[in-house]
Image (cartoon, rainbow, N blue to C red; front, side):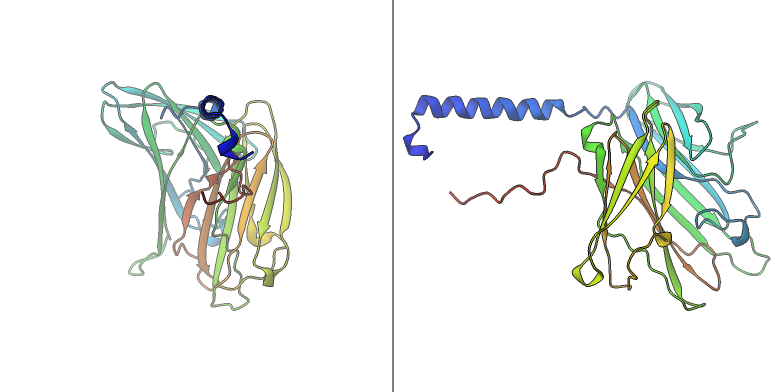
Length: 298
């Protein structure tokens, strides 16, 4: 229908109804309160860890700090729930002073029995607004005067609550690169998925999209049980052989809200100490329609 043929009052009513629909859709999105945070990937490795005893590319002593920044005028009480691949969740509580930042080292509490050498994710809830950041670091155990190689990364946790938006995730730079050279670089990459739901499994479909030269998209499915994480090694999947100049992007879809994180660790095959890398919380796109047509010019 051409706009010139619509009576002014009817046109105004249509605009009003459209605006109400837009407001209702926006209001349905969960409000970010800064009192609920998630991240899927963490690990604490004991002293003396070697490449032979490493876990998921972490082949040296590896510590992790959870930094809690209290934005309010009152003391905050934070409850941290840790989720593992197979073990039941465990909880810790921690106090954060007003307008203060507290570094909570997972394995440093007195009489703490925090599991070493096990991958974990976390949910942090607080009675006051806070910001949560996870910082990791590792160093080889070597005899002096040799200098150890080191690794450090940090990521801002993802703010809850979780809803439809968090049922579909993606990131742009996936790159599971392998080389046959014994002295060459390898890029080891993982996707870690956290399902914090107390009683619903997350049925996951991951679709890897490639440039035409590398062939059609590849799909991988898995299930993450309630209150568990799954750590998927891309370099162990039957994906096309990629060069340094290649990249693909994965889309991770779930039937319940989840949180997704990417981890990449470049290593040298002949000396597999910690050489660098990163962790990245993926982008939630469950409320985005990428197939919408382009707007027509007026």
